Image (tube, rainbow, N blue to C red; front, side, top):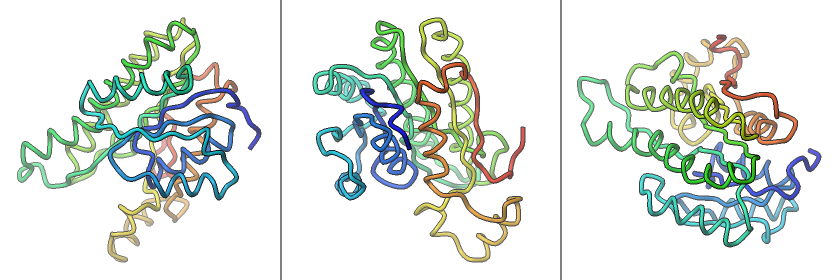
Length: 250
């Protein structure tokens, strides 16, 4: 991939594995300096960046709980202190605590909404101050196909991912005149640690719902994110891009 993000600085939350890790690798390969914000160990991501020919100089990890405003503000401040600016934000941090609605615990509802939705709000608010000042920015929220169609046993996760879509569209309208685009990517079933833990029977049933008859890869999502964070996507904002093999067609 050509270096369409050369000189740009990106923050990716939840970039230690799966989709987040693939996004980090793609943005580095596109020329960006990347700051990973999250609570998980990022050493494997750093190793993969080096193996792919990336530079450790352009990669920084800052331990961050995105549900805590003081830690989010520290993440953004540390990014600016280290790299001088912030141009791109990818809100990818997320968790799941699945249960049928009648059996769902209050703590599990709160934990998922706080991480998956409030975390994106806090990070977005923190970076917008700087993006508005520079009159350029790219924000991508990682939603999900279940935020569009729902999924039994995931009321909290579906609600959070649907909320991200509303956050995306409203923020896009508020900052469009400042050279900032805000979009969402809604992956379908992607081959990650979460889906690998499913039984063969469940996998077969889910693949039957997908016209392409396969799960996606983290790289499938990362390619779309890289485009939406690049200058080439300057006239795309407030959109939800599905990466789901045809499982849901709006």
